[in-house]
Image (cartoon, helix red, strand yellow):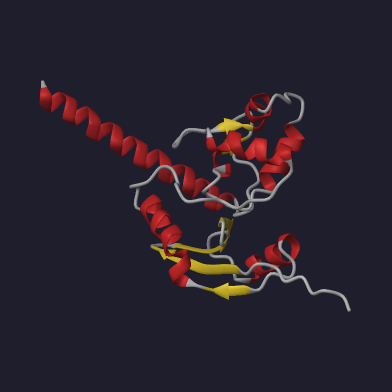
Length: 189
């Protein structure tokens, strides 16, 4: 008789903050999926079927609360980086690209060719684009910060509107912090 291999469960919840509604999923080891703003649960179902076939999807708002808290802080402009663990499977090249994305400073952008140079594959911009498109954790691994070489917004799993809103959010928060810092410096003089 064949032994049945059971997959680890995949826990999920949804974050709703202002106009943001995103499905999140995590394994026992960390966050593994962030959905597109406003997209249906089906986006998570399709991702799970392709990337974690056989895993049981279990809604667990309590288990996902630490992730939800950090996303809420990000959307409130009180967090720039996420500190929770990630559990993202990818090829070594994809992981190198995702690591390079995490080094793009908050409120800034980089081009696909910039990322290709950072991963020591300057002629691999198309491969970089494919690796970015495979990023399962939107916002957390900030692929929204990647733009075309000429400064135009380019493809994004969450859609160009979501990408534009995220970039504008980060620029607004950075500008507000800059104004606050400048006013503090002037007040100290």
